[in-house]
Length: 360
Image (cartoon, rainbow, N blue to C red; front, side, top):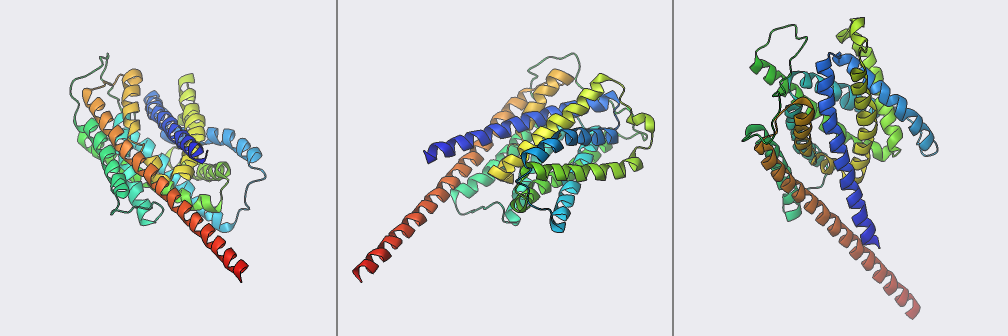
């Protein structure tokens, strides 16, 4: 019975991570569409976080009303740092990187998140890695393979598998300086790399904070609220034109609501739940799947072509994910067996002591 419950828990965890990646993949495409419509980057971030907060805050208040631990000054400092890293910097750098790059390229660069998260979690000893065991080596190999699959998608196109009316090139509408395409690409890549550092740091920092404040939904709400306040404070310095804060069409409103309520509200809570259940590295290793999903969505909605290199890369990514999942399942089984052995030893020792007392 316990084994069946454990297997069902693993299936739920994997299913939740897959839904998470699909929602975030849609966010890449929706955000690019919003920028193409002319939505201000800063306004997009503020409205996105505000809409998510309006939906999540009441739910968190009523669902966890009796389960929230008291807030301390130390916890508030932790939440403020989480908000700065996970909301202000991560989102700000993301939208700026997306401004310079296509959605598929942004997703490809974010495939460095598993490796960065793996290193951070291992250094902080949140993720246990034994390089002398085949499970530990499988974790490392699976992480490298998933990144290699995403790299294949980037460097090798091959023959197109779909035909579209346009190649999906995006014009930057309000760049004040005329930049060369190469400089634009380098700037976008560097910005997205720092974004990956922040995202990995946010995922790793979730673990110790959730141990001290296990009310996950309330934890996310507090982080989101502090991030929203930070964005509101810095927003006038980056966008002072009132006209740029106006929403001019239903399409702009829909992109903001999707980015806020669906992605930042629902998807990020799913991410926190998955991190709490499977660990930061387990969640981040699914990141390369976004590249495949984004490539397909961008092909359908933005006119980007889907190439055979994407299919080959997808196969490699699945192989890498299988390695990590296999290693994780074997480690869990080994830990369970070890606990069972210890429990059996304690019971035998207890019985032996009882018999000795009876003899005396």
